[in-house]
Image (cartoon, rainbow, N blue to C red; front, side, top):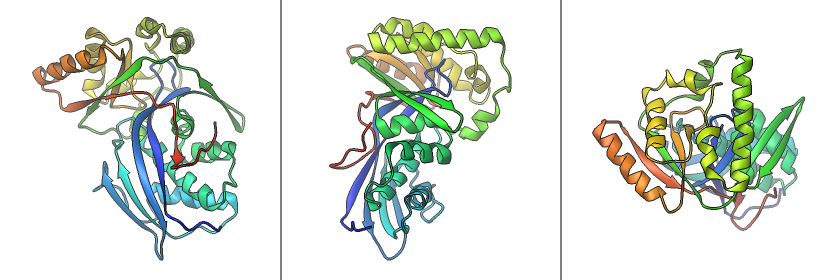
Amino acid sequence: MNRSSDFVVAVPATTANFGSGFDSIGMALDLWNTLNVSVSDINLMTVEGEGADLLPKDKENLVFQSIDAGCNKAGIQTPLLSIHSKNNIPLTRGLGSSAAAVVAGLLIANYYADNALTVKDLLEIASQIEGHPDNVSPALFGGVRLIVKTEGNYIDRAIAMQDGLECLIFIPNEILATSESRSALPQKVSLESAVFNLSRTALTIRSLMTGEWEDLRISTEDRLHQDYRFKLSPNMESMIGAMRNHGVYGSFISGAGPSVIGFASSDQVADIKYRLEEHIKIHKIDGRFLTIGPSHKGAHIMGEEIGS
């Protein structure tokens, strides 16, 4: 370990599932956490923005835990660091805040290990820590990613998405822990539901690759997880309906929720956002909207790339 200069890590938010693509499709969003890192006499974390009053500032912080895991894998001593994290990714809203913290920590560890960890190492360690490779992969590599879990391994592939699609995200004021959302799901589903989702997942991938956005209205429908999660947050189902009624191509729960994401063309998204903001005012729904583009770029140390 011979690096000592200060540096900055940037990690994007992510959205996963795309409705039908449960636990298998994720996309990076152009919404970033940035971490200023420097060598210190003690581990010190300061947080600005999202989670500033909630996140631990000591070794219990997920960034520090992931640094330690990465250094252990690389066979180096974990350095003492001062980190200032400027967080723009909302916590416990289904936008990949945990994946961003894990990925940031691993990139920091790999920096001090002189990039001893391979891309495969980073994906595997991050997935083990965070538990959701469909969030971890796009956070690492950017773009839209398809994740297939095999015995002891992950097949991770890029989906070449056409340009021109914007993301309209409703972020409610309420929070929903991923563990609670996951526990609401059934252990078994019907063959009919499985086929319903299989066909729509395939259609989602085709739509993203061809730019035939209208197909997203059908392809983002789901029978595996969303109906069960609707019971945990009353606004998720109604907001999906509102987005569809106001002209988005497709709408679904982002990750485990409670945020809801819809897709619209670049020339229509501002008008749809305005009408949806009027909708939540009328119906007294607490939350806010963000218009965000997909990010083709994944996590990186400023001035360096980690590969894809």
